[in-house]
Image (spheres, rainbow, N blue to C red):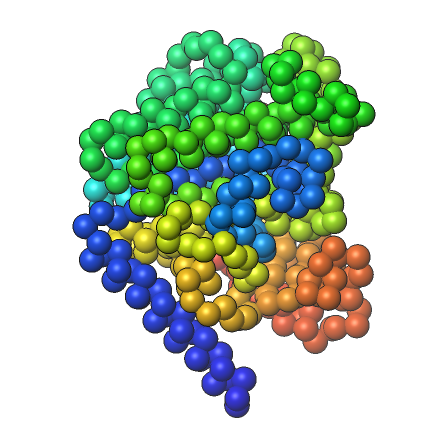
Length: 454
């Protein structure tokens, strides 16, 4: 009984701290600005504060000043993570199991976090990658963004900004345009414009900055590559490292603008990667064969495996939370999911989530400002090839398109964080319990699957 009572006490604490945060935000006449910065395919060991050889002085400084979210989980490829970020739901609820093509994926009237904040007086903007549909009715300004800039598809030539098949995808305010410059610099410039315009208007803002790097194809100015001439022997890894350092400099420029406009202390900044690093890339046909293949890209060590898998090398990523003057340096070890961003931001902004919305995320702010506690919360992932479920310290990976067919792997993440020993055979009762929960989660998914990328 004492464990049951402790569980209820934890839930009570979560409610109390969540309500306290929400009441504080509602009472504040100046709700915080919110910036979400997302890297593309950045691995666990691709940031300096995790011991990487890659130079990331800005990100490292943010880690030293802010909160390190040590067990932050996303999805194993880009579109699902981005869908979850915007909706607070597991992407499979919309039938999103993979990188997306051109068609709309959200039902008409979907309330994204951008739409919710827009309704609550925020100016909302995106600068960078969208990858949630390219047709006009699927573009950002149809889903709650006051302004949009960047590219609609999943990958681009850094300089021509063309998609792999040669199609245009670079846009401003949902209208395709041509523009010169490196994508990393342009995305940073777009973010800075949004900050300055919002500041001039005197409105709180929500800014989603989605970089294109270090996703392939990679092409970097010589000054960034030169940083690694004597540091990294592999040519492909040098190029990858250069792209990360270039992005890091862009993040530094964004932080400098916040300081210049004296809004650092009223701006919450969050940084993370959309999924773990990719091992390599080779294509003789994409981009008309312009780009040399990459035999080495990301580094997820010591976590297992790469982007597209169900292991933590794909799902657990570097993540930081910064609020200068409000949050002291620290580390949160509780498991947090990308779906949690929606309710957390809503709470900070004092925006009530409509009762009709069904979200999978929870407000993680109690983990940040209150006493930390463990709870056996459930996280769920699904792709075309299978699904995974995490409950507390246990993680079930199922290889099969439905829970009933296929094979299982079971890992104790607390004892075996690098997922080296499958203990399914020794824990049949627990395995059955987790399978039942997986079946329940599967039953909540959309029966209609979104079209994949072409």
